[in-house]
Length: 63
Image (cartoon, rainbow, N blue to C red; front, side):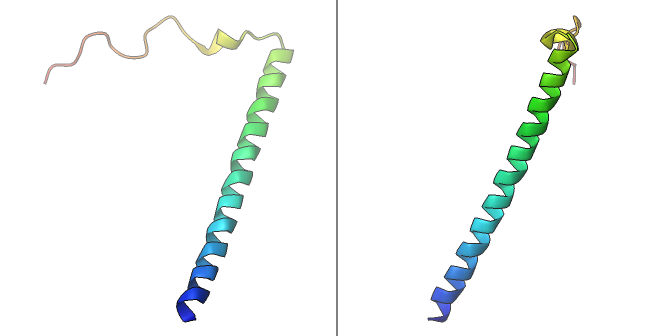
């Protein structure tokens, strides 16, 4: 019986943790959507953050 009670407690804890993580992801998603809508409303193009320079060096570094 003791093991079963521990199982129930652990299961409830995992459910609470999963719910908190879902809420956090939803909050991030909402903030991101609001930021994108605000930037789109200002007339800023979506690709403005990209620059012409490459992200990484084309030649690999020597050891």
